[in-house]
Image (cartoon, one colour):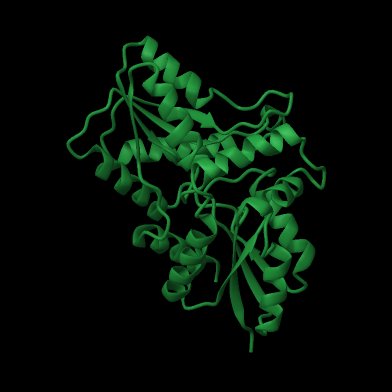
Length: 288
């Protein structure tokens, strides 16, 4: 009798200061970072007391397992337990069919495609890979829910949807990432009244090549130049609190706004919110 499990995948995070160097090195394909770059990223983790992502992903997996009735195993892309470790756990549990679920809504061959390649390289049997859920009604509903909560009694001058930037060269290859992000925003805007909104990218890396923009800090500057004094950020490309939220937005972008006399708020992250878990369960059910 076939036994199916879900392998839920995310980017991963260093468990503490000693793990930052190996984590950063793994992201760089085995190339150690310079001492200056390592110190910069370590300081960012220190500033937020290190990322809660591993704990949150574990809570998401446990809640999803209860909701969908299938075993859910966590595998990280750049930190232990790695995706390969999750595959070995699935084999030990007697599973012969895997549903691969990246915990990210929008597909790019560079991002979610990397999860799929890592999983297919390790898993020997039947595999169903879920390439995102950017337009799933339950996901749109979950985004609408956190926006309505944030906008209750509050009317910002500008709403900025954000997601992690990627190198701009993906557009020449016809990558769907940017279009999917804009589609999510359009569907949310159709579902609920919103302040004037636009889309911006965040958290670009310094690699010496162009990355997708505009950057969120540039969008804040443009909003300020247009007279905006309050901005709400909705990080629609992310599903959990981690460095890109707790530092890039809550520290860096917030300070950028303070210097320009702008009030910055953001929507809360889904983490293991029941509406988001119900979305994941619906996506898994469709693949099961």
